[in-house]
Image (tube, rainbow, N blue to C red; front, side):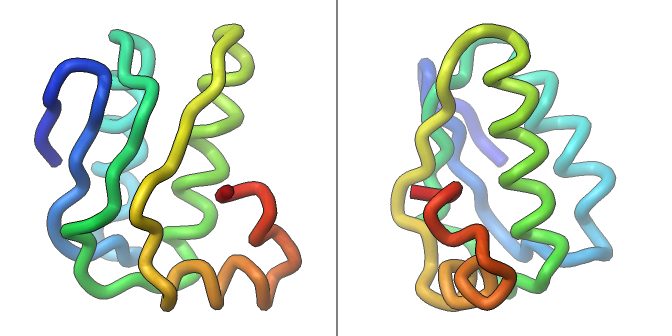
Length: 90
């Protein structure tokens, strides 16, 4: 995870093994002004990645702003669509 201005670049796997750490780190970054999350460098994903992105979006909305996801991997979009929440990641 690396920050560039209002953009957070996710690097590496978004799996259950890393979910708790990523949730906290991303939430802290969102609270400090991140408005875009770029997933171009994301590695492996599992269903916890869907939960993670939805949780970050809820936190942003609760704080009164929107959070945009860019370069969402097709594998992650497929999981989100399978769970009926694909439109929430767009």
